[in-house]
Amino acid sequence: MTGISTNLIHSADKLSRVSDVIPPINVTTTFKYNEDYNKLVTAKDSPKDGIIGNHIYSRLSHPNSETVEKLLESILDGNVVVYNSGLAAFFAALTYFNPKTIAIGRGYHGCHGIADLFTRIKGLKQIALEDDFSVLEKGDLVCLETPVNPDGKVFDIQHYAAKAHEKGAFLLVDSTFAPPPLQHPFEWGADIIMHSATKYLGGHSDLLAGCLVTKDINVKNQLVEDRIYLATNIGNLESYLLIRSLRTYELRLLQQSKNADEIVKFLVSNKHKYPHLAKVYHGSLQSEDYVKRQLPNGGSPVLSIDVDSEEYAKRLPSKLKYFHHATSLGGVESLIEWRALSDPTVHPTLLRISVGIENIEDLKSDLDQAFSSDI
Ligand SMILES: *Cc1c(COP(=O)(O)O)cnc(C)c1O
Image (cartoon, rainbow, N blue to C red; front, side, top):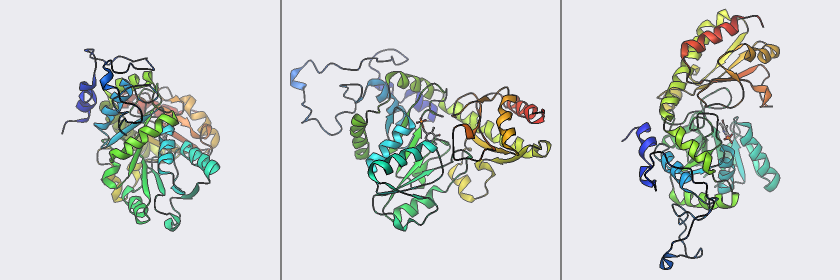
């Protein structure tokens, strides 16, 4: 088995149509048909998987989106369909499964927004992950985000897979907070995996993208077909940026995971010095056996903290030098966010931290001076 970085640098080499080491950005929206009229196949007669690798119009596919899918397939354990955002991927999953009821846990507020859209347009019923699953029927969907937004708590995928499958329902895992090699949801029974590639896969806070991963090639073919009409294929420029980003993905992610782990340890062990720091949340602070089993190579680079007042939560970001006060996560630069600014569902004393790749000693001393200063 070749390693992640080797795969992300080389697994799409054969797709290249030119001798450029860096794949060019193909700005075209339309592609010439075969010059040999004997090779022309009508839309009616083309095979179901005919879209893949056969570029006609860039809403369907283009060379850069195909390269992105090939690269992601080399590390995500299945067939990949790429989208122009993480939420477009979630919308596509709900469209494909078309459940009557979904069980959905805490997590990214945008996924709840999409579930609410489906409730509005087609009466989708929603239950919580903690609810009794006896109302679920064959073909329904369980949506599990783990580690979860914003506090990084880890949920047991195997447990929810068993509960979903008992009712004939499917399990979707949003694995955005812990992409490989941190977490491999198919190993624990997930039926479909979703990532916001805007986060760690992109890693530079300069592109929006998302993907679904499926074990079944027929599911991929249907998702690719659906994507034509949802009109949510990734753009050319974003594909290029994502290809560029994936070359260094493993280095970045592992460094971010390691830095986050050190910051959690640092905050927990120095908490007595910082009277305003009330609580630190991160998967590494959980004691359940499944946490280590599910995340054997390190935890999510996202953590959250609770401080002792809303006012302090509002002011703390302005005291930090190396943590930009901004939403999102996954980029090489560290971010902190007074979460109440973008998520209406969280407690106003919560701050979310996305750890970047900066020198760990610099990050620790920055946190130390901020917590030690008068605010
Ligand atoms: C950001 C995020 C999304 C949405 O992805 P976009 O690329 O912003 O559309 C979905 N799930 C999780 C866990 C996220 O962090």
